[in-house]
Length: 426
Image (cartoon, rainbow, N blue to C red; front, side, top):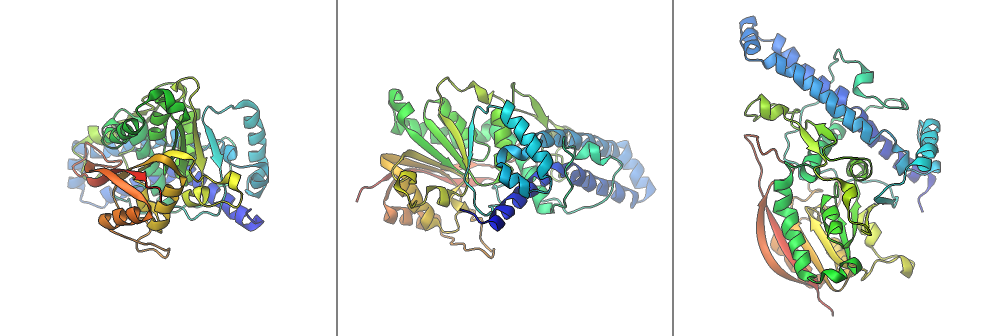
């Protein structure tokens, strides 16, 4: 049970995420305005040459596309009340209007995908294995009005957000590409496809799938979980970051038709672009309607810290030990502060005969921070897993990108480690 102060911190953190989504537009326009100011600082004859090739016009187009992105992002956080109860809403600065919105929403909305929320103070993982050059911090003014850029139905008080917060919002746009667009199919097939094949190989009898429970921690925007649920498995995704939880709720519950939205995720950096067409291209999502799951599908999303949700519980009926037939970790295990405990938790929640399927690198997220961070090599991870009680099989390397731009001059390739592991009974 959280104290009032801890709950206040929880609400403050959540509203900070909401504010980051709402302030994406002004921040992105400010960064683009810096480019215009630099244009005026070079000689006139150089400006004319740039104008002749359409450079300045392209900046105007980027402004327009930023506004299109902002429209989608503002829709995602238009009603944050769905993520808080009434007591928590009262702790927010805009508690009164949010509560009124919550009462209206709860009376009219019946989500198709259940999102559960287990609350604790936030110490959020901030990295998403993003192949992105971080834009510098800019704070220049621009002629676009604030109402165009950061629209909110309830006009909440505007709070200051950091460049890191805005970086995470830009990452969210790229996550939509990876998980819910046709262009992202390449990355999904590189990682999700072999993981799903391994799951089907371990449980070949399709008549028993509805009884097989699959846990997917670090699920991001939940496409892997959706695909597993589509095949008939009872599937629960777990995610800690509200930068992922808010958009996953939106795409799973609020999208009404295929390719309903178009975003422009690559406009924030003009480095390593081949041409304007690739920079300015739109990506539509979702490529498939999330509500098209077969009747009777069992698919949910639970919010909270993996170790807290699945760790040892005081009351046995709340404990998850031995209750999961499969755990699928994709680009997840390196979010651990203590990898040994991650391995122990995965081992303890697996049922006899269950399988752990892993795919990902070891970009230890807490390295060089003030938090605990135990960094080990791939061989050491496998040795620790063996000591904890796993038998590792089917090992190989998968070369893959992560939220990359396939049309960029620059690309990162992870040599992701893939394996399946079964729980050894002792």
